[in-house]
Image (tube, rainbow, N blue to C red; front, side, top):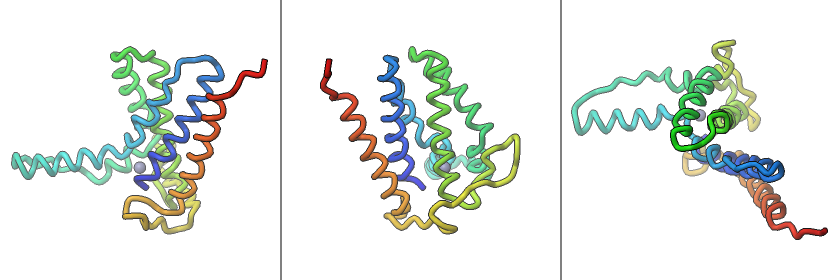
Length: 177
Ligand SMILES: [Zn+2]
């Protein structure tokens, strides 16, 4: 599950944007898109480590357990706090930064929870039990250019299309009074 994440994130961000619009609040839903891949940050760290090994000869061994650790509720809270503080430095209200960063992280985890069976220990530190319902079956083949599952991608694209239509309708509404 790689490409699917960004499709679902954009769809949820559009929905969050509509909620903000309805309540006349400032829209921070772009944070949901910005942090789509935060729980997979170990992939980026691993690439950085490989580059440093090739060019600098310095090896940074990165445990495979990091990927599992990042797919937990504990990691979500820690990430949301750190991201919220960083966003605050850029003028985003602390609570909004915290909530939207956590939402971004949570949507990613929820996607993995739906896709995989078993998935990760999502409820850690409350439970170490691997959870996941594998909504598309036991296997989750990356049959779309090895970056996505075509079924999950199609469902995501339909969801996104509906959100775009809804967003268009809500933001281009002709006032009736
Ligand atoms: Zn993931």
